[in-house]
Image (cartoon, rainbow, N blue to C red):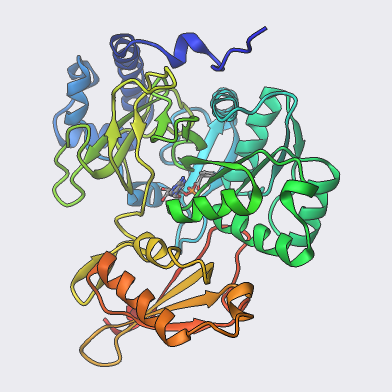
Length: 439
Ligand code: DLL
């Protein structure tokens, strides 16, 4: 028997017209609920003289004001919840911000939908009930661990809820319990691969791993190549954010030509981040999402700050849901160095071209006087460090040249010994911006 490649073929291959009809129906329901149940959304609608009845077509979505991170902070904790507080059964938060955290509140039905979307996502990358999924995303407030867990559970796969930390132990567990899918941040995957090499674990010989589900932070194609090669797996990109549901908003299929956005639950737009103007498919801009089915804490036109572009053509895999290109950075992660816009992922791309380097890097910006200083620290891999013929001067010049080609900037470069740069078990921190206190 040939196994179906879709989790739900009827939904994943809907015609565009059916997708849009479904979206409009759900959008009207969602807008009406938000207006009736949330004083925040009612105020926003009233401020532009908009009533739910004015939303008659998908184009009318553009009449709705954007929702931004500060709306969530100002309404913290429950000001944007549209159900009775007793109906909230779970709360998650995104990492790493100061002040009021950004939280997501879920009803039982929201969790059911999240579970369904994550099962669909894992199935899309080839995950099946026979798989053992080693989940090394953090469990807890972060949505990564629980999101993958919910999906794997619905799929009926075997779960190893390893969470973050204990890198050596994780490798032992992956080996002994015969994990076939690894789910973690790409930076942790790099760290795991490096530790495997140090411990003498050969993934091809000692592990049963076939696939990796990596996301929660930007990662370049060069890092993908390295992870795939070092772990002997196929790597897939998974995207999401706490405000929408966590992971499960979009996922790559086997074509690796963008991430399918589950459009039966989300409407995606791209906008010019400076002017708010809505862009056409194919134009690069900030992703804006509207949740169609989330009822605990719905988001209308939520500005993610993530930069990408959308393709609406049917994919070679047969799925019709729109695809987003891999996110190479957030507009608020963009660095302005001596007036030039640079994404950390561009630096990553440049330095990962050199097989002499390990996969860690750190960008340090400072402003001791008028001009920014721009230092990139990279690390030698073990093999290069042990190569007596390595010409460090030439390597340094070549890396600087490559960074210049990619960014237009001349960077100071420091090549450090293997293991000297910090490793992370969650989302990587690639930039140390010391200018912030001096502005
Ligand atoms: O990172 C949810 C997640 C967990 C996604 C596990 C994938 C896997 P937050 O902590 O709220 O949620 O952070 C969301 O992380 O706006 C992006 O800037 C970034 N991000 C998430 N996935 C990707 C990705 C989770 N695949 C923020 N590529 C988002 C690039 C990503 N950036």
